[in-house]
Image 1 (tube, rainbow, N blue to C red):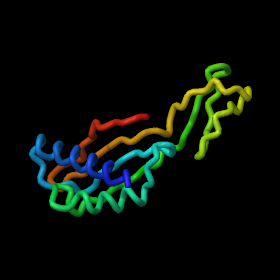
Image 2 (cartoon, one colour):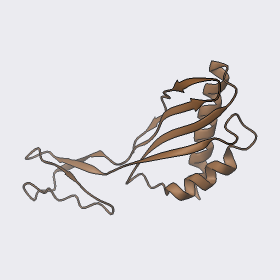
Image 3 (cartoon, rainbow, N blue to C red):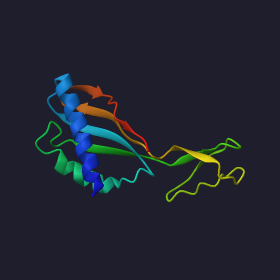
Image 4 (cartoon, rainbow, N blue to C red):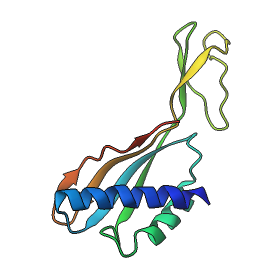
Length: 127
């Protein structure tokens, strides 16, 4: 299950931020996951529960925001939802010269700490 490797990376990144900032414990980790990122939110939540044990994230919640997949047509500049599985035909002109603009995100957006204000993290993976 590749969600376990994603969960381990999330925990490692936040634990590193905790050490760097002198934080004791995280209460919640907020993430954005694109509709096309290939990550199953329920599986990630389960893996996160296992990966967080024995770390500053022990007991922390994983808060997932799903980012809908969207594309932009390079020919007519129309922006449209592509869905999952993606339909990449432009809704404006019917062309296929499109680029995905959203939907592949896998990003930590914030961490709530037990001993202080929220911290906006900088982890970002697209693609």
